[in-house]
Amino acid sequence: MTRTISHWIDGAERPSTSGRTAPVYDPATGAVTAQVALADQAEIDAAIASAKRGFDLWSGFSIARRQSVLFAFREILNARKGELAAIVTAEHGKVLSDALGEILRGQEVVELATGFPHLIKGAYSENASTGVDVYALKQPLGVVGVISPFNFPVMVPLWFVPIAIAAGNAVVLKPSEKDPSAALWIAQAWKDAGLPDGVFTVLQGDKLAVDGLLESPVVQSISFVGSTPIAQYIYETASRHGKRVQALGGAKNHMLVLPDADLDLVADAAVNAGYGAAGERCMAISVVLAVEPVADALIAKVAERIGRLKIGNGAGQNGVEPDMGPLITAVHRDKVSGYVDIAEADGATVVVDGRGFTVAGHEEGFFFGPTLLDHVPTTSRAYTEEIFGPVLSVVRVASYDEGLDLINSGEFGNGTAIFTNDGGAARRFQNEVQVGMIGINVPIPVPVAYHSFGGWKKSLFGDAKAYGIHGFDFFTREKAITARWIDPATRGDDHGGINLGFPQNN
Image (cartoon, rainbow, N blue to C red):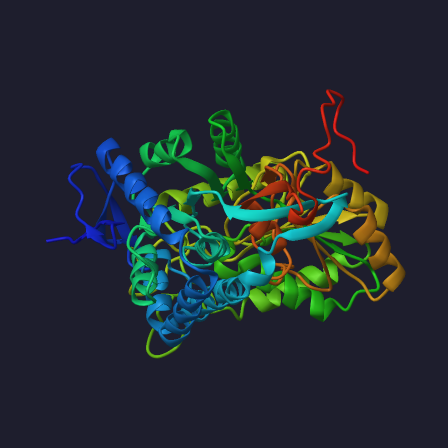
């Protein structure tokens, strides 16, 4: 009998009674390995009510007690990260080393969160006016919702959850129904670390669960990562219901290659950033803008490297870990294949074709081979839309300015990179490009935890980026307090008297 992946409510797994489920696959074999529960309204209400009880308790804990739980969670995550990586690979399909890398980048945010006492301090101004002090307090929001995508089932929740919990909030996490088990592992780790029941809740589900979080009057904020259409829907719906929102959307990331660049470095970077995690990254490089005359030489180098890539079961075969695993579902594989069809029909040259790719012994798996396209028209949907698969497009441009204009005219503004040995050109690029995260000879410029992650334009909805200082500001709200205490030595001598004018400082 196929197991059912359930919710985590009140500090324990809670079997679903909704009667609704969705299949969970092993992408490498195509086999259904489990069913995930899809919450009904009663379960949504129960999850949020549990989180409210958790917040009422947790927000009263001292900073020292909260910090001890954060440190304990960090140690559990570090000691047992291998088993969590195996869960990610089994349901997402990415190779084990990539799954482990995802966990380690999430752990950076956990480590940032352990230092939260310094980051949620208020401020104090003594004698702002005669005998009057003004000070500010930072307090938690309450119950907060996190909606995470399938491509990073550990890292993305850890962008938000540790900071929210450190600041005194209770979190309801709605993971992707495509790879839901990692969320339960994280929930158990929080419990083992000493987090009180209800402070971290996992609500499995589909759009009904999402809308339940967006519309609940108890939930104070929503944090989301996913495609741009869904991010916009999340932002508009949650904002309409009075919530704070940070909704990170899709991307079409370009790499601008100047003629003076080291082409071996560029080729390595393009392959790593284009095909890592089978291209299922919002920070993947999708388009190489090659400033002529470098395109032919660069394409040859990229194609040669593609020929050396090993594609297979992310868990390894015969003791060997591949470089790239399968895509998440058959539906997504076919969607990616459709984009290659579109590019070819629009006049692009298919240099390396990943359509119809199979792995021996895993013929039913959701594999798609690394694909390299040349002469991709900028009017093609294969250029303008996010493919989210291992498809790298080369667009030939005549100059730096032409390449910059293509990047800036796009609707997305998540990440970009420039490869050059000219410091002046790189400096000009970082100032002129209209993108939130920029790499200079770095292909995947994901900021470290003490900075913040987020793009521009249709890659970010809301005012707050993920983690870093933005994260602590997002999960707290400030009270400004103006206080006057009568000096007992002069009590009654000067109360100020009656004055209906607007208060002035003196």
